[in-house]
Length: 148
Image (tube, rainbow, N blue to C red; front, side):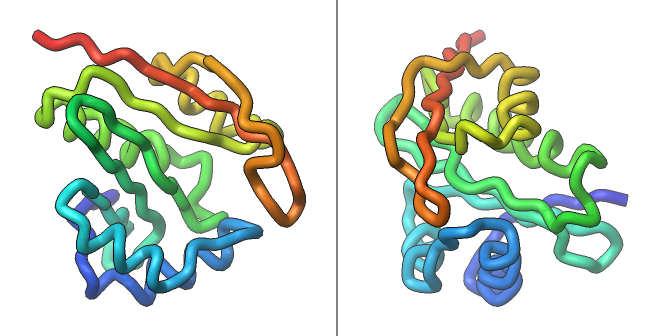
């Protein structure tokens, strides 16, 4: 059964390991520590039973949010983990009364683009040469959040 919990520094070793396995240009330990300690950031870890299988983060400034990294272990992809993480981050964004969410995604990452599109994110631009290893453009995606 999938379980989500708030990340803290105790999750750092697992996050680093997954980061290195999931991304060709992974974040460094100081980058992740800075995110985890920032009051503007909110990270969730995903577990199946007691196994760490993914994480995702949200940062916010004023009424704008940015989806940071979403990473899921390869053997757990396409099983709803990314969906659950993104859904929980969106719920947090609504709690914070954010007006919008943005994110960047590799232009070749069709599965991530499909997931974000399911959540109502729309492509609004391109950042040329944003990603390294290999050099690749990023799509900028935006979702307006409605306040109720």
